[in-house]
Image: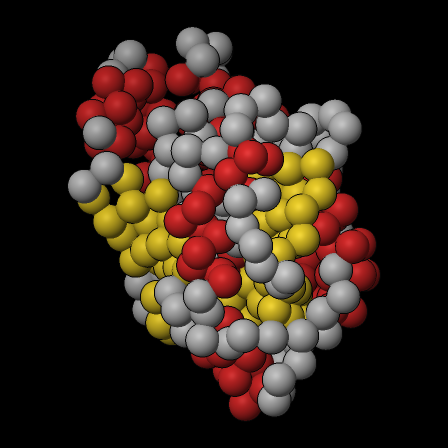
Length: 287
């Protein structure tokens, strides 16, 4: 099987690191690819770095205005030609056999899309996500509780991305939102192999608690009809923590979290918050 695979790479001001991501795609063992780089109106030397590549498989677009990674990905999907579509972030890398492994997995398991495990790297620490294989019939339920799929671990048939686009209103957790909607409609398979390296940057959007709060409120409203009380308790607790990190009053969402379930964990977290100890404990754990 040698069908064309489109790889969509959004980027913004990653001139200092994007070569690693580009090389990891152009050097894939699966060679029939097109790498579509969508520059979200960078102000650094990103364009200069990309244009040094003399490779007919690389296609470069630069947006006129900064529109966000979700809009850049949607633009890339529209411009792509492949029978299969996957993604690559411009500050991360893929293993050499990533695309070939995922294509074979999808075909062998007769599914519309697949996702691999990945290594999340934060300074000197690294974590494998997810830690174990997840059965296909259990993916959606686990996704509603927590996310374990990053965008660039997803590879699927073109039609699913034509039907389900990235939500441009989400300031964060776009990978989680997309995975929920894909898993709700299309059969998928978890390839339990680490095929991506995800590096947490100091200027990453994941460091912004306001965007985290806003995104989780959107997601909690969006999926309230399919989330159970356990799912909602966790998401309300996370909203409250993001509010706490901004020094906002997080009482309402902590109370909502506790009211959803008898799980002692949320009661302990709320108690620590009321004693003004939670922020210190949380930041110590995250170091």
